[in-house]
Structures are given as C-alpha cells and as structure tokens.
Image (cartoon, rainbow, N blue to C red; front, side, top):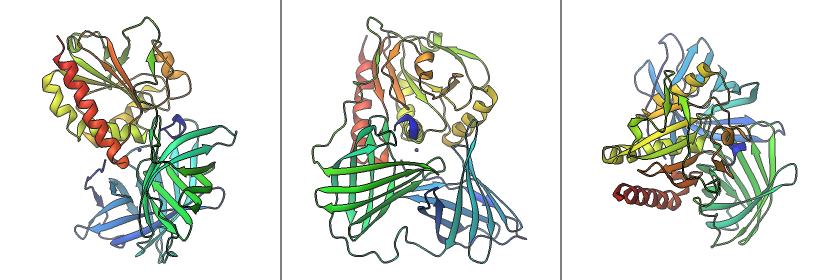
Length: 414
C-alpha cells in the first residue's frame, strides 16, 4: 500500500477479562460507527462472545477476516480497548444503548481522534434493507484515485458482489487495502474496513455495468480523495519485482542495526553466510507488513524453508527514532505473531527519504513492505515491492507459489 496508507485471516481467539461486579458487554453481533471530519460515518461490525461469566471474546469483522482484540479493561461504566497493533485505543462509556466514546490513534508527534458509537444486535453494516442492486460489479476495474493536490494514482479494484453484498479490495504497487466489506444499494456503492490502524470508507455511484463515478475515499478523520473506475478485465499492476532496484553496478546491500536487545546485527555475520536471506523492510504500523509477517510465520514459509537454509531479517522503520518506543511496538508485533526470526530497529522512520538513507544501495524505493531476496553468495537476487495479502484472493495465492519457487531455485544454486 502507498506509504501514506502505511493491514490472511487471523483466527486468533483472545479472552477479555471483565470483573463479575461489572456489566458484561452484550453477547452477539454489534455495529460500530466512526465519524469523520466531514461528518461521514464509517461503519464496521464486531462480535462479542461469552466464554464464562467473567470472560468474553471480541472479533472485528472485515470480509472473511475476524480480528481478535486482546487488551480490554472495564471499570464501572468505562471500557478501555487497547488494539493489539498499530498503537491505537478506544476510550468508551457503556450506557443502556451500547457504547459511546472515541478511537484514538497515537502518532509520534500527535494523536488522531474520531468519535465512536456502537449498538448491539445489529448485523448490517451500511443499510438495513438495501434497494435491490441495479448492477453487478464483480470483476476487475481500473481505478483512479486523485488526492487533494490533484495527483492521480491508478490502482486495480477487484470486487465480488452477491445480490447487494459487496466485498473486495484495491491493489496498488505497494500492497492492497486489505479486506473491504459493504453494500450495493440500488446504484450506490459503500465499502469500509477497520483494523485498528486504518479506517477506510469508500462511496461511489455505479453509472452502469462499465463505469463507477463520483467516488469518495476517506482515510481516518480528515484525509479524503476522489476516485473513479471503469471495468477492465485486463487491469493489472506493474511487475512487483521491477520497481525497486539496486543502483547501477552494485550487487550487494550492507547494514548494521541493533536487535530488540540492543545487539548489533549485520548481513555479513556468520549466521547468514551461504544462506538465502529474506530482508523484510517493514513497520509495526503497516497493515500490509502485518499480512506479510503472517504469511512468513503462520503461513508456513519460515517453518518450511528455515531448515533448508533460509534466514529472515525484519528491518523495522517505526514512526519514532526512539529505540525504547520502537522496541515496545515491535515487541507487540513479535508476540502477536510469535515471530521466530530476527527483528532489527533501524532508527529510521517511514518518512520520505529515510529508507533510502538507511540502505543507500537502493533506488526508486516505493513503500512498505519491500522484500529483498539475497542469494547464497550474498548478492541481491530480486527485490519485491509491496505485498498482496489474502484479501486479494488469487493474487495472494499466485504470490505464494511464485515466492516459494524463487526460494527453491536459490537454494538449489551452488
């Protein structure tokens, strides 16, 4: 996904501890709404499930994904929800109607705050009884987003529509918008997602079977863009291995950064000699990096290839240059996914120019994640820009097959 928007089903079951003296959240489906600066409401659904009288489970819905939340505390009528990733939280009050309060996302130098309301017992996302859809937009679309400065960005929209139910995503050169879910209400398109790090809302008019117009895209509290799309069965992005490269004449990269314990690690360390090494340029704030991490760990890649001679190094670019703050957020990510490979704190941020300063051998760096594949001789074999997660369907499946084939070929080299 573009650096600006720098988020595999994660079937984790996490228990929420609530004192018996307090009133449990009502079990079952809920509907929540975040309010943007423009007044538009960004909805999502979540489940609350009773396990025992004192324990409940909470899952956020985004298409096929059920995102589990671990850190929820309740004191009287106050409910505090700390999201497991992305350094954000909810501060809420429970009343007879449901929950009311704010979602707060913490950045290095400021907080973003959005008003939030949630009501139990509602299983619809945008419209309770949508008007029958006039068109079916299932398929591929060339989608053009235009920011407030008038700069266009072409993406690939991939949608699946059954009746009025709509799911899908937008693919960009640096990743995808993960699981989007919504409705086609007559000729009105509505999609949203919330992952604790990003809150996305898409609206548009479906002009006919070939054209989508008057699109509006809202990212968080106050970012907004316009978008349009036209049906294009051949819509495709550039080859992800063709974007970021080494500077002419160079074959290797070099770095020395501390791990979470402060120990300096270099690519030239004996541990990595004669190994295929995967360098994951990532950040704990990045949803697509989360999907890539899930593929490497829970998708079975590391378990399959580490015994064969593959090592992975995660180079973290956090929103702060403070080592201890970066360590805190990275430790949360490490614990969430049980990451077995080395994570290094680069001391650089995702700000424009920083990644290239950290690895000056690179050129044309696009965004996070970027994956650098090193062969057994220590040379850069390929550089893959972005990551198309499981929300992209066949694109994810194709990536996994291609990446494993590349790994097998590099391991077979003498």
